[in-house]
Length: 253
Image 1 (cartoon, rainbow, N blue to C red):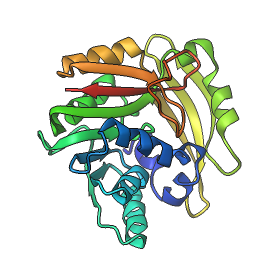
Image 2: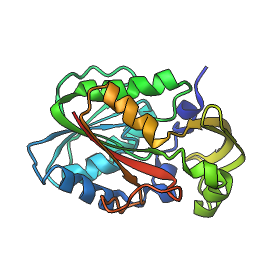
Image 3: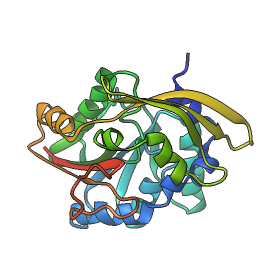
């Protein structure tokens, strides 16, 4: 049986690109470039690349990017977009829990909950971090965003998502946040590219910053910094607070 995150991304590429959370690509890539000192010799892996928005933008800026995703439908959309721009980008179908790469990349990016933290168990989510770490060379950098576990302690996730959603975008209801597991359960309604509506019973893991720090330390990362993630405006000046729905993590092996 397919998991909710597999069903969600089937035939959803065009609609995905219109979701409000995809609007920050250029600013997010500005931050990535700065973090690698504009070194175009760096090899980049985009984990959970989806429709390829970050991979395409970074390729346009002269970087060599490998994009991986579990969804063939999302990858088809990514390849189509890249083809329209006369770009050749290495988009591959892989499960982020089981990647074939070892010591190959200078930078790994994993943005907008592309893979982590959607998995159904903490162990599976950890496998994604482990595979990202293994794909990186020594001294490689890992930049990713994930859901901030501090946010639901102070705010309603349902109200926040409703306030961010625009007409035609995904909607969320029946949210419950489990304090024992830090998982948010909801019913997500999306409309696919053919106009078919589907309701999915979803759950996502929110992480406390101390958990992320410990997980990454256990994987051999020496420097771990966590910031608030502002859509399209990642910055080292944004200290993480309870107001941030997502956190931005920058770690170096």
